[in-house]
Length: 435
Image 1 (tube, rainbow, N blue to C red):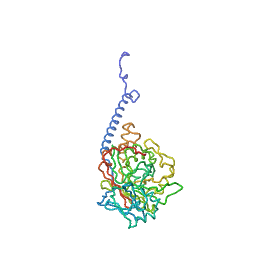
Image 2: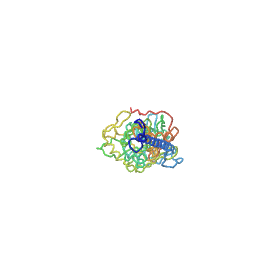
Image 3: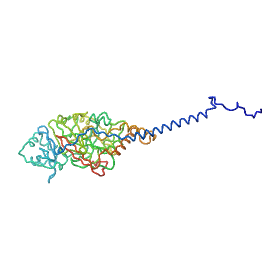
Image 4: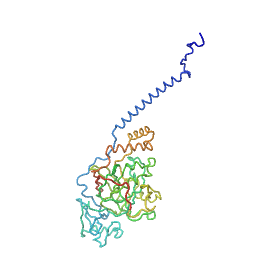
């Protein structure tokens, strides 16, 4: 046999040596491809199954608004707390020392007529007349009274547009929002009266928050200390949740980024029809119960005695905040116009309890957020948490669980007042005019 003859020993044999690598490599690639394809199919299947599950938006209460309850409220005796309302007259606003609230009507003594001096705001009237004189006017049955429809009263005080909000100041609300401590932020804008409708806006997720409003009767500083008298109001802290989740910093929630913007739109500061000045405000506010109903269903019930930061602590935290600022539509704003001073007329919203529409993303939404983030190679959101929040917003829109035109919200508290809010169709600016 010549040298050109091919022998059996010249044919490579798969002995596990490097000579067989190309064949084994192709086989490995085939197996890897099968596994990868299977993983993709499984992932897609899992994604489809998980996304097909209905999102959950649980309600806390099942109680209904009883017929006739909103016809009036129980008032405190004047020795316990003075109650005021403001009405419009031919000569302008005047203050009523309220003596009755029933049948949808408020009765009281016109302080301007009773004293011969014009009184257009209860805070000014209190400083001029004092508690004892105002109590005497309220209990004097010989004085003439006026009776007006509760729906016709003005905002109960005349005040400025730079106020203070408190976040997650009830333990149960901390749990539903997954934030473990209270925090503060500027709440900007004009207060609206107890019957002002609220525009639903163009998109967004409109949420409610019943809150006790603490009102400074005079400038409060570290030097003045906790005041002897504080005014109290029923308030609602409306929120655009979609704007909020777009602007919050998930790794630093208590820094309150986005809260001022999402809570300071026109109409987002509803206030009750009455203004109350207790003789002992620190005892009085702890006995209150604040309820909020949506279309007759109880959604929130607040007991201010359960606040994590009690009212004096909220005041102390506000005074101690210093020069820190928050973003308000591109403008840096402080918590109070002058650091260390809570100016007269400032309303401190003291926090909301559980029962708002918003919940932190649940397990399903977190899994979907993770899968969408990985599938997009991180291009769908800034982080996995942000991706989960986007899933939450998508689910919320699809479920239609947030407030919409036609919804009626009733907020009420015996000894404090009522708010009736109709959600109406219409646009809403994202920025309040602070002039």
